[in-house]
Image (cartoon, protein in one colour):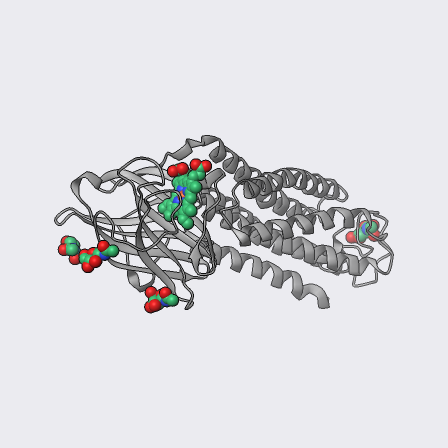
Length: 402
Ligand code: HEM
Ligand SMILES: *[C@@H]1O[C@H](CO)[C@@H](O)[C@H](O)[C@H]1NC(C)=O
Ligand SMILES: *[C@@H]1O[C@H](CO)[C@@H](O)[C@H](O)[C@H]1NC(C)=O
Ligand SMILES: *[C@@H]1O[C@H](CO)[C@@H](O)[C@H](O)[C@H]1NC(C)=O
Ligand SMILES: *[C@@H]1O[C@H](CO)[C@@H](O)[C@H](O)[C@H]1NC(C)=O
């Protein structure tokens, strides 16, 4: 029974991580917290380039304090956000710019963008700007400033962008995909903000497809399949095995489709880098592929290496599930869908967690009872070709996986 602690520890870890994610894993619009308790009354996700605009409009003196936030900023990129009363375009934008300068400081300044050959030189804007500053923490960049808005700029065009810094000078940004669409309208007073530029609802559709495919496969089918293997074995041998295979393989097929849409999305917008989400996705694909091949290569139940295979299969399997859930929440942060979707998924996780909480002790109870009925004798070698070589009558439930 030495091995009995590890599955419990794994489960404990899974539920703890779920809890932490539920409470803490959100950095979208509504849930983002700034340092020093700075708060803004309004926020809008800017649909392209994965950015956010937070602001508070003061009616009395016509000022607006803004924070433009761009997760996934490196020390070799610049970020910019601005207003363009002249039209929905880059040229004419009254911009706030920030990047890590040659003394290693993340520095913010204003720059009137007067054409397409700019190097974003500092200069005064057409309206007053005070208290401009910027932070770059854990790859998330934010520019803070207070703008003295003339009445005609309360509703206007907003433009934002990210690009590379070379030799301490902001360089030209990508001129494809989302970098050409990062334009929208903003109404500081009513709180309406949109990304209209190049208006490709097509891409939004692709992102949603990506999200749904991955949440269903990695986030629901695969954990369900693992639960089939763990909890149905005591009731139905070998039905559990076929169910496990069916769930895992369909999860894998849908998951690979979702993964491919993600890779495509990433390649279509080189200006955006969600490196953690992407790397986790690639790791998950690798793990899941390994699992599928390992299934074909598994030793016979009575083979002496079967034990090690089981340890391997469980470790990679549970790791994949935990990382999948983490990555799904990372995806929610990027997509920033309506909160109900995040909550729907959290609801599913709570349901699965509750099933685990009920089935885990039940399984142990059944296994231990069978064991005591068998009078602690060493059981005959298994006759099931799916089982582990050790009958559920002699060990805990974790030893029985195929
Ligand atoms: C290093 C400074 C920059 C350079 C050299 C630069 C260059 C360019 C060029 C050449 C285009 C036109 C591409 C085309 O029409 O095919 C363009 C488009 C664009 N730029 Fe920039 N840009 C810079 C900074 C910025 C900044 C600071 C912003 C936003 C605050 C921005 C936002 C845009 C947007 C939204 C477009 C697409 C719409 C349009 O063509 O006006 N750019 N940029
Ligand atoms: C504008 O009003 C707000 C709140 O009423 C205040 O916090 C801010 O300092 C004022 N700004 C200026 C420039 O007067
Ligand atoms: C870099 O930015 C900091 C903070 O704004 C500023 O004090 C410093 O002079 C800048 N260094 C250069 C080389 O521009
Ligand atoms: C920017 O405005 C300030 C005062 O508001 C002025 O002192 C400064 O010379 C201006 N800079 C440029 C480049 O016009
Ligand atoms: C498992 O143990 C039960 C006794 O509870 C026994 O009836 C059954 O044949 C055993 N199965 C295998 C595969 O050894």
